[in-house]
Every structure is written in C-alpha cells, then in structure tokens.
Image (spheres, rainbow, N blue to C red):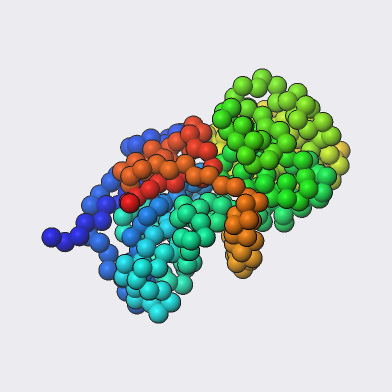
Length: 336
C-alpha cells in the first residue's frame, strides 16, 4: 500500500474567532523530495498566534493562506530521505513546514537540531522563533538597562516568558501579566519575575501596576494590546521604550474597538514605540541561537512547553491560544 500522509488544510475563512470548521484533515500520498530537498517525518509542529493573521484575506507581514492551502508553520523532525549533501538520513532538523506527518523542506532553509542539547519541542520555542523574537525584541528594541523596570504582557507565553528572563539577566526589575494563578506562580517562583499580575482577577490594572512597579515602567514588551496596554501607557517613565510584538487581544476582532486615545500618554515621557518583526534580524539568528542555547544549558533560562498529543488535535491546540490554555510554548506532538 502507498504510504499515507495526513495533512491539515485551510477549510474556510473565519468570521471573528476561528473554529474547527476552518480546518480540514485529508490523506495525501507521502511527497517525494527533489534535488536539494529533504523529506522530514514531523515529530512536533508549532501553533502560533500570528497564524490568525494568515487566515484573513488581506495583506500582512505574513502571506495570507488561500482556502484549500496546506497549513504551514514551524516543525521539528527527522530526515527520512535526503536529496542534499548537507543532511543525512537520521538527522533532526527544524524549519517551516506543513501541518502533516511528513513534510518537504528545502535543505537551505532548515537548521540542524541536537536532541542532546535540549528536547525537540524547545527548538520550536526558546531555541526557535519565539526565543529569537524575545532576544532581539528586548535587547534591540527595548534596550534594557540595569535597574530598569520591564513589564511584559502575555508573560507566560512562549515569547514573554523568555523576555522576562533575559531582562532579569540584564539586571532589571520584571513584572509580568498572565491569565491564571498557575501562570503567575510559574513566573515568580520558577522564572524569577519580581511580580506577576493575574489580569483575569484584577479589576484595576493601573492600581496593580502601582503596587508591582512603584517606580514606573521603563520598558514595555507588548504581546497583547487592549486594556493592559492602555494601563501601562499611563505608567511610562521618561524615555521609556515600547516593543510591540503582538496584539492577540484584537486578532479576532472584525472591527478594531475605539475609545479614549492613548497616544497623548506618550508625549510627556517622550516614549518610543516600535513594532517588532523578528525576520528583520535574520542575518543575526545564529548569534541569538548560540546565546539562548548557552543560557538554557546553564540553567539561566528555564522553558516550558504545553504539548497537545496527536496531529488530529492540532486545530484544538491552535484555538486554545486564544483562551490562554497554554503555559510556555504550545506545540503538537505528531508522533512518538
């Protein structure tokens, strides 16, 4: 019998919050690699909030999916057929591939993975795109200095959890927003955050910030947007820096909400607000990966992955991002 490759396809564009109808599981033949390509048996695949933007029929920094496309994202897996001299059968690699059991990858677009350095899922989180986003977003855009107060929204996620730890390594006071007591305990007890705020149990974000960040905010790393960001803007110190990485609070909005404008809050502190795309630092990915691996190996940076078992449950793993199901990086375990 011809080997079968189960793959997830983009079924329909969502209106508002996506649901299972947006995903379609099909059975395809296992693809054959051409020259320069690798056939990779997928061990883990990544689901990320930015993928919601690819479901829209509009231009963005990530090319939108067409209905009927195979879904794409970060994967890590084992090379089972190689048509490249760069990699051998049995090598573990990571790159951008399909939500499938087997994926074709261009050998020039993958990186070798060492399972002895860290577990495979870490290469989709702290040692992958989220870790590099945290590294460059904080150090280049946030420009933290010893003694600064750094506030992170979405702090228990894949990016935010690394941001806070790098800030601590740079001598900063770190405050994180997260959506559950289990998450806030993880931030303070395990990751070394100085304070953490459960936004779902807090009525007044401004008052909570006054207690957690009594000297104001020097760096704000924003993964969320919405009312949390509104509150942080009122606490910015002189020459504060704001790194805008994500706005997950608005990803499912059909129309962006309007209200009291917050830009005046930036005038007196002369705050700088800058959007962040990690792809802008592609020529320096090796630098980030090396430093992050050193920190992980030494125990200076902790990491955690929320693992959903089974390719068939990949849509649920993605949808869970919008209800805050994950702690750390959300990944799908495709096979044993």
